[in-house]
Image 1: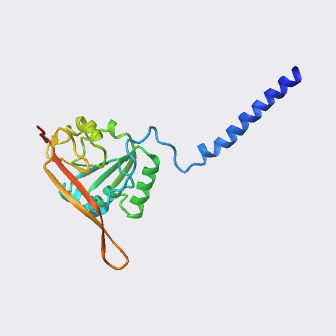
Image 2 (image 1 turned 180 degrees about the vertical axis):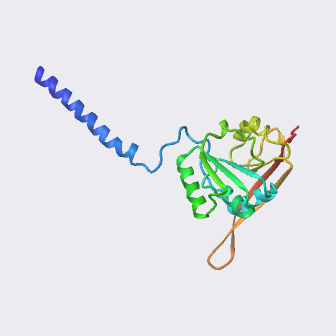
Image 3 (image 1 turned 180 degrees about the horizontal axis):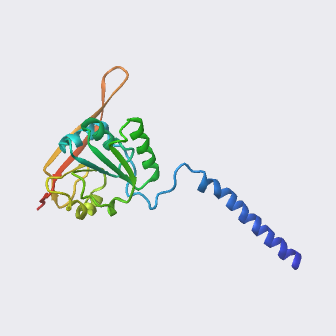
Length: 205
């Protein structure tokens, strides 16, 4: 029985070695590490027309500090910096999104105004922000309300497509997104909603 026992142990060790060898490239060769926890939403880019409307409704101006919670590819903070010259901070829990945002910031040469951080948005201190942008689900907006309540009076919150139950929006506007096709006619691509609140918001009855 001894030879068989040694052979079994050797086979088991070889099997373990093969598992490790196969696993190592996945763990160490990836461009970016895995998120600390699974993101709360799947990343869907906000159309640029909607980005522009969000910042317009928030009346972004010099001296504002913009926080984008779940910044994706960084297009909101980059637009805020380029268009209004304000400081902007993007936060995302997914390292891949953080990498994309940093590349976007660099390619648009706004590193002096925009900061991107990997972070859990539900653990952030938002008190320095004067404008907060969101593209989350309604229950996640509600989950953020205790943090958002601590914003300075007059701070603005804008959300793409999803409301914040219990808080009455100051404004609700529609944005029709269109794309130009090859023969210069426009193809309708859908309607989006942008919600605006100001702190302290009116409670919804």
